[in-house]
Amino acid sequence: MPEYEVELTATEGLFEGLAKQNMLFHQCIGELVDNAIAANIGNNPFLVDIIFIE
Image 1: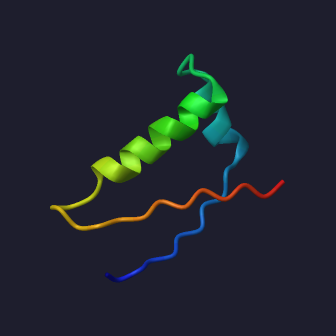
Image 2: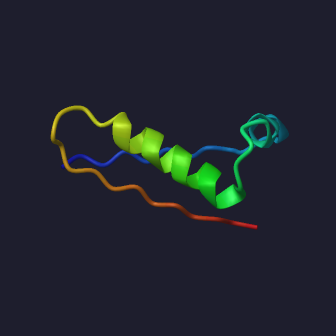
């Protein structure tokens, strides 16, 4: 299975957008993970790593 590393920088705009969703922080993380899983094409295995720094 090929691996792709993606680095995302969370800016203030990201949190402002999520803040408008009326969800708690852990629910926002769950939503982002759910979106990543839904983006999977076919029945390919996938791995979602969540790393918090600071």
